[in-house]
Length: 175
Image (cartoon, rainbow, N blue to C red; front, top):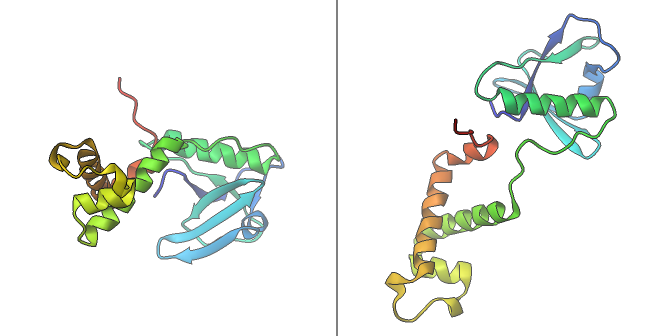
C-alpha cells in the first residue's frame, strides 16, 4: 500500500467531535476492490486517500491504524493532514512535494522512454526533447546532450521497472 494512503478501522473509543464517519466518507469517491474499500475524500483544497479492509458501516466511527514500519512517518503525516481537515483547519503541505526541476526531469525521462520503446535512436530522441538546432552535426558521440539523453532513457526504464514507487516515499535519511 502506498504510504500516502491512510488505513482506516472501526473505532470503539468515543469521539470528541472530530468524527470520521460513513457520512463523511460517502462525501468522497468510494469504491470496492479486491483488497478492500478505497475512499478518495476531498476536504477543502486537499485530497485524502483512505483504505478500509472491511466494508464501511453506518453509525460507526473510524480511526487511522498506523503500523510502525518504514512508512510510518509518511503515513502519520497523511493521517495528521486528514485530522486537520476534518477539524476545519488547513491540511498543510503534502509530505513530499517534488520540485519543479524534478518534475520536469521526470517528464523528460518518461518522454525519452516512450520514444525509445517506439524504436527511436538516441539522436532522434534528443532532437525530439531538445530540438534539432541543439544537436551537433559532428561529434554527436561525445556531445553532452547524447549522454543526457541516454541517462534520461535509463531513468525512464528504471521508473517503468518499479522505481516510480520511490517517488511516493520520502528520501531515506542517512545516519
